[in-house]
Image (cartoon, rainbow, N blue to C red; front, top):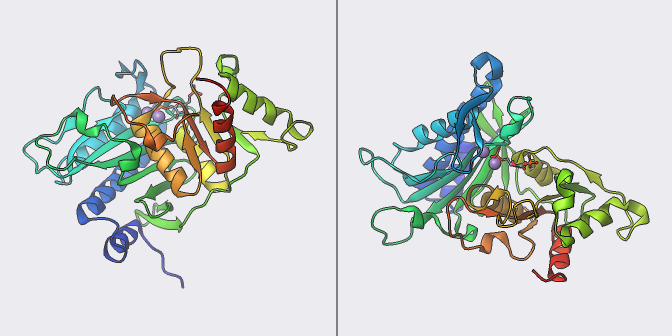
Length: 337
Ligand code: AHG
Ligand code: MN
Ligand code: MN
């Protein structure tokens, strides 16, 4: 019988055999995974657990918070604050950073998360998820502040997401490829179900919210126009479209079978660089995609190279199968910014 490899064992081996992760980071990832299990339980209960619907409040980005946005945020904070591995946390649902209270030991890591991604899908029983990114405190830093978080995505030491769908799947990178773990509810543990995930370089599937078409910039319009022309057009092949409106679920599909995902800048609010948030949505997803052989840009720059200036900064996102992302990027290069 082939032995099942649990997340715990995978992390121990990453630490021991491959030397990729120090023990504090291993503990941190175990705690994040435990939080995801607990969020998954709440998601599964749905109406029976009284977790659906709006919380009647707004977050710093002016979005209405759902009950599950707040529950997931609290689960992650409470699970992570006492272990001694973190200095501070930042979340989509909190204005400022959350410094580990001084009754607990402070560690050297910083954790960022989108506690519940795809909030518009909660009440309609469609896949949602949690996205997380781990950074290290800058060396010789005395006292943690928001500035410590403002590091480019290339500095991440771990990143991942957990998708709550027909299965609960945790997807992780510590810089050694992408591994997927499926939650075994009877055992209560995540079991390794895919390793060394690789995205095909070419695809016939794109994901974009087409209702925004009239607001797009010329390079994005051109790319989608060409896809829509199918076999008869310049691409010489038919394309398919998917848009789940949960970035976790769209990225999970792309990691599983390829594709391109775009939430580009558009003219609705020209001052905003995009809809998605750089530090806890775009950065972790971009690193996963790159680790799986794909690419991620804002049209003009590699996302992981962007130097953030604000915690809740937004960014234009184009990621997925390498050749398609490069094509969209080349269309941007042919159009002055
Ligand atoms: P969140 O629920 O964390 O605010 O994120 C939702 C994001 C992302 O998951 C998704 O791709 C996108 O918003 C959907 O936006 P539209 O409703 O504009 O399509
Ligand atoms: Mn989100
Ligand atoms: Mn969210």
